[in-house]
Image (cartoon, rainbow, N blue to C red; front, top):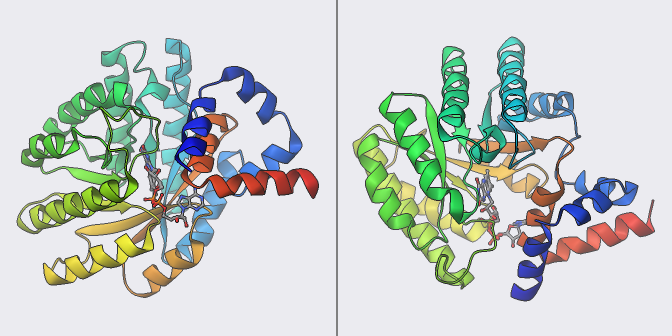
Amino acid sequence: MAIARSFLLRAASSQWLAAQVTKRAFTRRAALRFMPGEDVGSALEASGALAGQDIGTILTQLGENVTTPGEAAAVREHYQDVIEQIAERGLPSQISVKPTHLGLDIAFDACLAHIKALAEQAAATGQLLWIDMEDSRYVEPTLELYRELRTADANVGVCLQAYLRRTPDDLKRLLPLEPVIRLVKGAYNEPAAVALPVKREVDERFFKLGRRLMEHSKKGRSSVVFGTHDLKLVKRLREEARRLECDAGTYEFHMLYGIKARAQKTLAQEGERVRVLVSYGSAWFPWYMRRLAERPANVWFVVRSFLLP
Ligand code: FDA
C-alpha cells in the first residue's frame, strides 16, 4: 500500500503524464467522482444543493505552481469573481487558495498582496478565506504569509498537516495569534525525516493536535476544523469535544466532495457543523493523483471508467 501511495504521489508531478491523462475521456469521467464539474458554475450549483442539507462548502480552483505574474493575477481575478458570486447567491461558502497558485514561487510579496486583497474582499461579505498547505518546501513561507495576514487581523484560516514532524512546534508558535486552523493528515510524498511514515502514528498525532486546538479554542478566539474522512477519528474527536464541553462552532468537520457523503449528511443532521471542499478546474491531474494515493483502491474506478464508457 505504501509503495502504491509513493508511486502515485511521484507520478503526480509528471507533466507528461498530466498531458496524457487529462485529455482522455475515461480519466476525466473517473476524476468527476471527486468534483461536480470542471467549471465554477458546477461548484456553485453543488454548493446550493449541499446548503439544502445544512452543509456549507469551500470552493477551490485546481492549479498550483504558476510561473508568471500574469497567471497569478488571473487566479486572483478569478477568485474575486467567485467571492462576488457566493455573496450574490447567498451561499454558505468560503474559498480556499494555494499559495503557489497565487505566485509564491515567483515573489512572496506579490503573493501576499493577492491573498490579502482576497481576504479583505471575503471579509467584507462575511466569508473566511482558507490557505491550503502544499508540500513541505512551502510550509515556512506559507506560515509566514499566515502570520503577516493574521497580525493584520485578516479573516483567514490556514491548513496544518499532522504528519509533519515540525507541526507541534508550528502550532505552538501560531497559538498566540488566535489562529483558525484546518488540521489534516497531509497529502504529499515526504521523506521520513520530514513526515511520520507510519499511518497509525499520524492518526494519533492528529488526535493529540486536535485536542490541543480544542482546549485552546475554549479559552481564546481561535477555532479548529478537522479535515478528515477517518470516521474513527471523527468519533474520538466528538467524544473529546463533549468531554471538554466545547461550544458548538468552536470546531467543524470538513470533508472532500464525493468522499463519505453519507457521513457528511449524518454529522450535519446530528448537529455538527460540516463543510465540503468542492474542487473545480481543468488542472486536476496532480490533485487527482493525491486522491488516488489516499486510497489506492480508487485506481479501480479509473479502470472501471475505461471498461464502462
Ligand atoms: P485516511 O486516509 O485515514 O482515510 C480515512 C478513510 O476515508 C479511508 O479509509 C477511506 O474510506 C476514506 N478516504 C480517504 N481518502 C479517500 C479518497 N481519496 N477516496 C476515497 N475514500 C477516501 N492535505 C494537504 O496536504 N494540504 C491541504 O491543504 C489539505 N486540505 C484538505 C482539506 C480538506 C477539507 C480535507 C478533507 C482534506 C485536505 N487534505 C489536505 C487532504 C488530507 O491531508 C488527507 O490526505 C485526506 O483527507 C485523507 O486523509 P483522511 O484524514 O481522510 O484519513
